[in-house]
Image 1: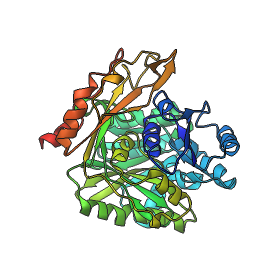
Image 2: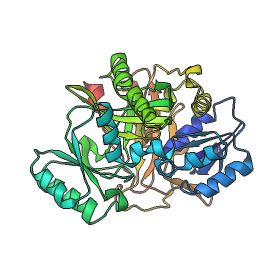
Image 3: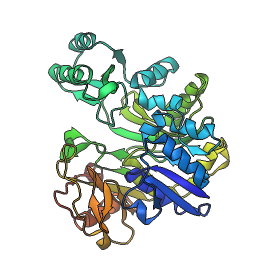
Length: 421
C-alpha cells in the first residue's frame, strides 16, 4: 500500500512511526512533515490546509489510504473531498468534525441526547455574556465557540478574568471568527483524562486512556499550551472507568450523530473531567490528540493501518485492537518563550545520544543545510515505555538533558504527582 499522512507535528510523526511498522505498507508520504518524518517517509511540500493540492497528489500517486492528523483540514471538509473521489481516508467528515469545530453545536448534541457534560449557555452577544457571567459563581469557564487551536478556553478564577476573556474573544477578536460566539460553562472539579476511541460510525473501540499537561510551567502554572507532556494509563482509572466512558459517552455520541444523519469515521477524542457524579465531557476533538498520541500509539500492539482501513471501510468490528500492558511517559521539549513568541532555526544537538528504546517524536523541527533545527513552539517529545509509571518516568527524564537547543524549556513534573501518590 501507499499511504499519505497529512500534517507535520509530533502527532503525525507518531502516526507515521506506527504506520511504518505495518506489513501492509510499501511507501509512505507525509505532507508537509518535519525533520523526523523525513527519516521515515517522503515529505511532500503541501500544507495540510491545501485540499486541492493534497487531493491532486493522492490521485496522481495512487494513494491507497490517507490519514489526516490535524483538526483544521477535517473541519474544512478534507475527508469529504477524498471520499467524493472514491479515496479511502481515515478522518471524520466536516459534519462530524463540528464536534470540535463548534463547541456550541457539540453542547447542543450532548444536551439533546443526555451525554454527561458541564452546564452551559451559549452567547453571540458580548453584553449578554458579561451580564450572565456576573450573575454566576466563580470560577467559571469561558470558551470561544470555534476552532482556536487549543487556546480558546479560559478558566476564570474571578469575574474580572471572565469579563476579560469575553472581551478578548468577542470584541477584540483575538481568535478571529472562532470567537463570534462564546460558551459559558460551570467549572467542573476533578482529575482530567483523555479518552480516545476508533469509530467507523457503528462500532466504537476505545483506546487506552491518557493524561496530558496543558500549563507551560511546573505545578500547572502559566498559560495553557498545546500540551507539555503526558502519560498512559493514569493509575487512578481502570477497566470499570473505561467501560463507563464507552457506555455513557463514546458510544452514545456516535449514536447521537448517527441519529442526526452523521456517520463518524475516525478518532473520537473526549476530554473528560472525573467528577463526583462520574465522568463528564469537557470537550470533544475530532482527531488524535497531541501529545496524547505520542504516549498512546507506542502501546498499540495491533496494526494501525489495518485499523484505519477498517474504519474507512466500515468494518471495524472485524479487526482486533490489542494494547501493550507497559506504561508510557512523554516529555515535550519546547522553545524558549513558548507559547509566546519564539526563535526558529536553532540547531538541535544530542538526538544521537538517546538510550535504546527512547522514542523521539519531532514536532517543530525542520532540516536546514543538513542539520535538524527548531521551527516551532513544541519542538520534540521524548517518550519511554516502562513496566510501571515510575520506571517510564525515570527513563525519559534520564534522556531529556541529552537533547539541547538554545532556550530549551520543559516541565520537570510530568507524572510526578502520580508516581509519588
